[in-house]
Image 1 (cartoon, rainbow over the protein chains, first blue to last red):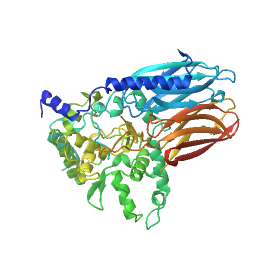
Image 2: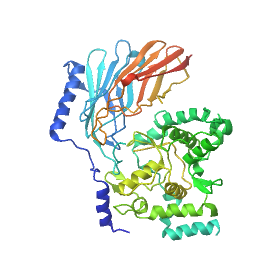
Image 3: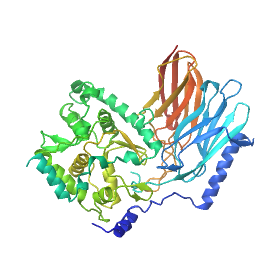
Length: 156
Length: 257
Length: 106
């Protein structure tokens, strides 16, 4: 059997792509951050976005970025007069900022959605809620995406 | 040799108790090393994506196939009754061929022999669906692999594969999954390698896959030439791994990162 | 196989908030991946999901390549009357899947 040192060297070889955390080159990261700002502006039309009333539930440390469970819950009475019209979720470092745009109304009973997203890289995930009074509220969570130590070979 | 003497032989040959999977209390499913959200994904059929395959399998179970125009249900009726415990006992000895077969191969033997239909390709959507559906009927049941005179040679062959260094990295399964189980490679905890949840929905695959696909993945990882899916070497290794995991509850179809 | 599955309670009290979970069997090919030879794999995703309750749309969503394969969408709606919930997924290359669930509201 190998010594511990030999084993670690070998394991390092087996896991060349197993950097603990995925990272983008800085210029691409900057472009994608700008794309996120633009995507948010398209939804809000430049209206101010306030922090609060929205709770984005997503693991801070992600086992595998291919499928990340996330829920968004908005604090709203969900009445005809006062309800959530839409919930948008964005991510900062994917090739495109969009994850989902969900449209709901008073008949939802509760301002909550759940889905599973692809998150390519460590960065922030943003949930944005549009309320019936025209206001926008948001929550963002900074996530760390880890890569599998024993990655699969290429596409077949 | 009696079964007891044979099992003792396995333990001795392996050199340490750990090579037989460790005492039951220390056996640990990879499920326990997953994040809360991934565990929740496995636990709830309404969000477990493997449900899509299980439902396909249920439909295939009822569908007539082959020259015999016979469905699985025509012989085995309600799978919830007839298939209960079957996955927990596979791989198993097949008297017809004198070899051991895994669940996928048992399903295909039925297709060829009883339905008179061509076998389903290993790792095809249909075979995974039927396997997932049959395995689902044993969820929660303890793994119980036959260790007897007639299965001995196969278990020994599987154990030998488990202990054998392979590939350019010259690593054996046991070096990661016994000696270093519980430590980390990169950010991931090295599991003990108990195949308690196959077929699994692996997030890395974004789909359902068999244990043989996972073993192939490991072999490529150590830079070894993988065997063909369904190869006797994999079936023997699968049988040894299931025997090593004996008593652990079956989780199929599970979710893994 | 274009299988979809929904989880809707069969019975509910009027005014009760129903939790609805849906899964659709779809690879959600992003359009950003390449084959070993460098050739781009074209995008093939579900782009829209909707739920109609006795003919009235009560929930919809636009999906993007960042939705994981075999999409899960869970949401809620208030049980108003007995009838049918119809679910519709549409997407690239003419993808279309539907399923309906009956509910009795007392």
